Length: 176
Image 1: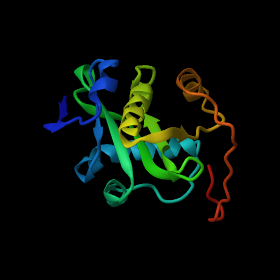
Image 2: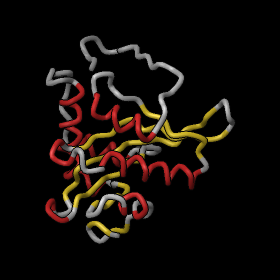
Image 3: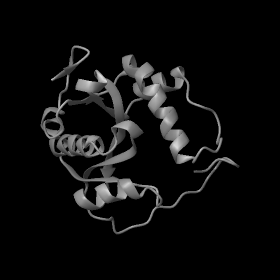
């Protein structure tokens, strides 16, 4: 499987369950396609409130080039002509309790017109496959308490973690 002539190194198994979907790691050449998704994701999480600077192309290019950050993209074929319709940003982290490694999805977003078509599930399955190759003990992520659609998917494919998440906002007036 390829997108823009580049192979999907670990996406074949996950995307097989979602015909027409191609998954691959994004790189700085994908910045223009990723920018509107990053902007829409920020808008969705902030519920339309202006919480600071809007992402620009330079920011997305830096994000894609940042060491330790892996962003997997989902490209829809057929009727969407290979358009980037979703992404998941994740990390490979040390896991102190097991003395092994773990994965953490920090951000996952699917365009509204592509929701309900298996994109989020395929992205997660693809990252799980990557985690198995890397020897992770677990893959974890957070979900906003009011994102019930995402929670329905996560309840089907994962188990609720036995912990709560907390945040200390360090910049006044910025929260979501």
